Image (cartoon, rainbow, N blue to C red; front, side, top):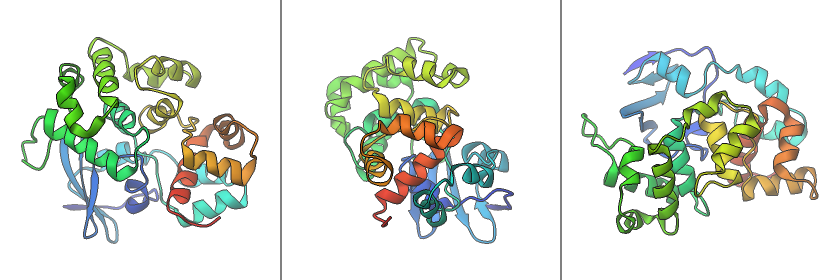
Length: 266
């Protein structure tokens, strides 16, 4: 490992344990994960120690985002301020869009530990072993497109097996997932909603966590509860969030989400 001294704040625990990514585990203070087919270790102690280079850290943890500037833009009320204070250093992750898409299709009506289990089982079943023998790559669109439904079902997907297979077929056949990064929010979301198993929340998660669309405001039960209890019971949570928090609404969303799901009091 080598030490990288970052110019931007980063709290690994808040970031990697916040329910936006599912292939990391904390082993006695060291985080181990697989990103883009590479096994990576990270821990914090007078700097960030890693088995990767600084360019990876900048790309993956969005260190090109000025977190303090973003926080000043979304710190609009006492509720948001409380979440920011408790979770300072939480950053959005820039994931691979394909992995993010399938992971969040698997997330529907599931909790984070269950999602992690499903994703890891998919990787063991359909992904290629890493050269380091420390796990498996995330399976390719072609691997999941050709996967028999009965084998997909054994990965714990349940009714999502058809969605995963058909979405994989669409991507393997040329659905231009990466091109959505350059589209306006509504246009990119409309395209994602055409894919099987992709509803409003999944589309917003993919836009926010992998396609650089920071205005996306995913709405699950935690966010809907936050908006209803803290702001207004009569508004559409997604529309309210984007309008109230502005161009960095996605950061506000994830601070509220993780604060609420951690059973902290408002």
